[in-house]
Length: 59
Figure (cartoon, rainbow, N blue to C red):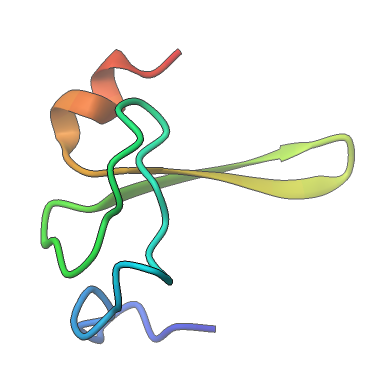
């Protein structure tokens, strides 16, 4: 588990970075990176967003 107080947005290669669920851009080393999580059918699901605007647009 990533320590939530760490700077875990730093030093991530674009090849390993998650993609924004709205625009599809790789999210590497972005302080605006947002993540939401939820439980669906008994498993944890996540969606990553490059900024708050993309997070708001996501359905």
